[in-house]
Length: 209
Image (cartoon, rainbow, N blue to C red):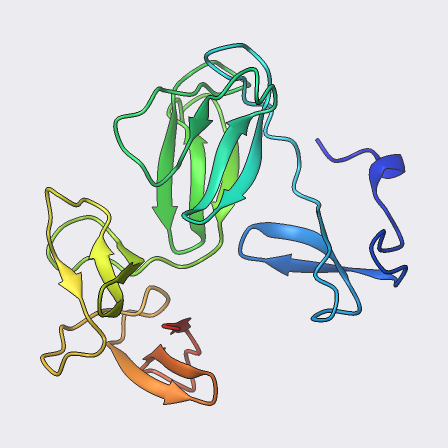
């Protein structure tokens, strides 16, 4: 399902400049051609079709300081939210077969997929960002902000307390999520980043700023 063509703008409502289709880590969107002076965007990702388990209205994507999450379109009357990164929250159901939706992390990105994989192919893109595997368990690393700057913590915390601080000298071997080569902390014109040692064959990078 796609957005109605009549709802898609051609001109930026903020500054009157043309809009251009682009693709980011959350999928396709229209961005203002005056970027970075104008930061208007129009989301082109299709409707989720997922119903709120509390009130039955459709869930929509919203963004916050801790990332992207699903929120009830009936807000503020209904305050249900579903954060794909969190555990121990209420189940949401597949809009096609009513089976439980589960988080699937692969080399293509992170998706919410139907648990009934034998009969249903529903999936919803969460982010196209590649995930770095935790070297201790089956989790993946999430970028976090701490008292002493940016570090990486395991998604299975507190069950797994592995962390990686790019400022420390005792480096831990992290594997590139695209090719499996070791990652190395490097510094460029925009600050420090994790870069694949398989460069130039593999150009994976993760900004640490």
